[in-house]
Length: 211
Image (cartoon, rainbow, N blue to C red; front, side):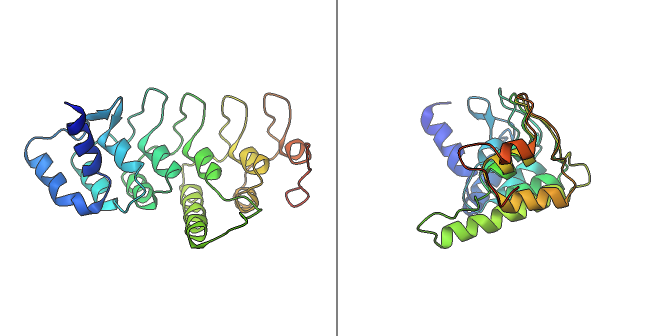
């Protein structure tokens, strides 16, 4: 397939506005697990969309897209959906049975990325409506993952860091509170032998709000 064809497929799954065209693609024998760019399938691409495309994601799932297929670095559609704050895709994938605790090549799970996208305690100087929308999505995604019965709340990545440690390190106070209430363990050390309290007290400025 040439570049124009790849671009067309990429556009096909980014929005629910293209649902009819996607149905035609499948009616014509289109493969739901077709690699569009590198090792990214249609579902990987759809999960990364910043537009409303929950119906497209559901159509891909219904058509037989592999919901847990990993890229060459281990990213799953769910991880991509979390990174992109694509709440509709997160919901559709979890309802379809996507594996929550898959670790990529860096040892990170969807929960790590749910924390990474959260907004810090210090709001940007020009905080506007878009930031508020993102904050709402961040909180919803984190809660949705934590509400899942099978979620491992203390996965450790290749640097020995848990989602809670990420939240502490990047000063995501809301995520810290939410994870602790859900039972996250603050005593797990990273590869440097530091636990969450050590990280919170580390220079340049110890974070008294988190401590």
